[in-house]
Length: 276
Image 1 (cartoon, rainbow, N blue to C red):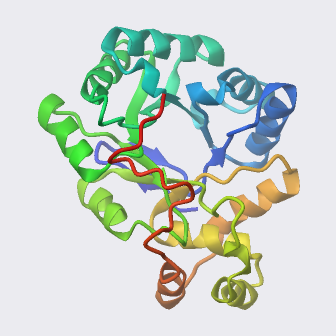
Image 2 (cartoon, rainbow, N blue to C red):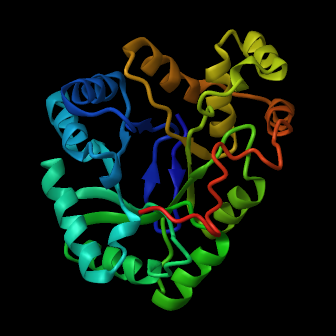
């Protein structure tokens, strides 16, 4: 399984585990199963209201704490510096863990324009030991450049919408050049027909895998860390096994060619979208 490495040496496994809508007792159980199946990257968020369930699932798994990267994210309504620090503290308390391994700003909210202050709060939280690594989600190159220009600190991760209908070719290359790990949310789409695309079905048959595994293998081949979500133990293991599937360059290009100008799932353009 190929690891992805950031500019500061921080590494992430090839495939992580998404937890959106995995809440309460059943959510915790799904996380426990995922960790026991071999996942070492868990993706949560303050706005998912499941930091507690994910933390409990991690503790119940019996896994070595140092082997797991627990992620959470700062919501847009708490970008102001003091509010951001308080929210990060709350995230740690909710999780029941000693610290959060990776903390991200969920969206830049450029119209509100408080994301640089929020980033300064993440830097402070890292210095205080509340979090170990800091990054962002849904940031555009101009947002990333501004963070580095104004604070001197470059994120280790940018988690963005990325799937075959929206392959984000330029963003992935930009991140690679800067040593920023690209994570993919909704990596297999959400409620669309990606798995039924003939090119994906053909590649899956050629490798003796499922279409979903073919899509996840496409991410891995591009150096992108996908975050698939499933509460089903068998599907969890199938998703993770995709990290060991090796696609040819032609197969990767064929899947990337499915990209569409209007490929976003909900037209959430980070240049104007505001999330609170």
